[in-house]
Image (cartoon, rainbow, N blue to C red; front, side, top):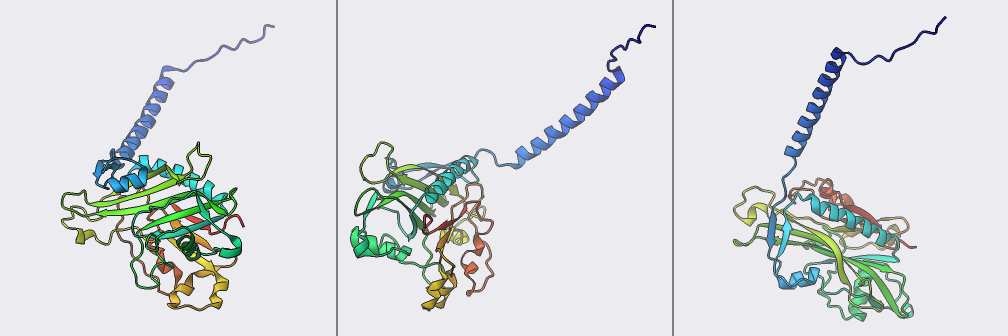
Length: 327
């Protein structure tokens, strides 16, 4: 008896039409959803010619212009550059011997590759304040360059708008500390009638040039900037958006053992929370947000979170960095 022969069966016309109809519905839904997403996203950011001035441009980037073309927030090109800088910052701090955050009012004019240090004379530089005192005493740094400052809302003075983060590494130079990198964070407010109104924010990294074999002044190696417009649309004068800003840039948590020394004002003591190693909370401006408008803060003055609770949700760039990560 001959075995039964099975013939391959194809799709019928009805089945093909049904598949095509379902495919059209699915693809149509995808196209509509994608179009909605695209339309809801900001279009290509406007470029703003920011009048930083020749001195700032040279200091920030080593450039020779008095203006910088900067994209207005939200800016996703700058966001990718910020992500790249974040990875570099984490790599730098992971291999660091010490990290010091120093607040500034003006721009940072001091970017050394090495800092003179004698362990028998200078002792342990275990706080940013001691580091600042050391460079004033032994590196001829002006006392007005970096603020003598211990966290926000402690003494009634204005919170610094800018900061420099010194990342120290292992030194091969006897009698010197090695500065692996410096990160400068600067926010500059423009309110003039002929100026673009808003805040120019930038984060910049400085390090030894790739071919450098000897200590020298650190050079700009990368970073990002973005221009934040006023939080109040169609503002007619700066007083309508004078609460816009991005502070604090960092908060320092000191060792709990320092509670043995009670200090005035007492609000300083609320930051003595670190069990073993002091550490920082650090914030960078986020190119993906639309503006730097104010955020409500309801914590009491005895709670350390009062100093930074309003930073929640304002940026995706927050870091927890030990003051001495290599220990």
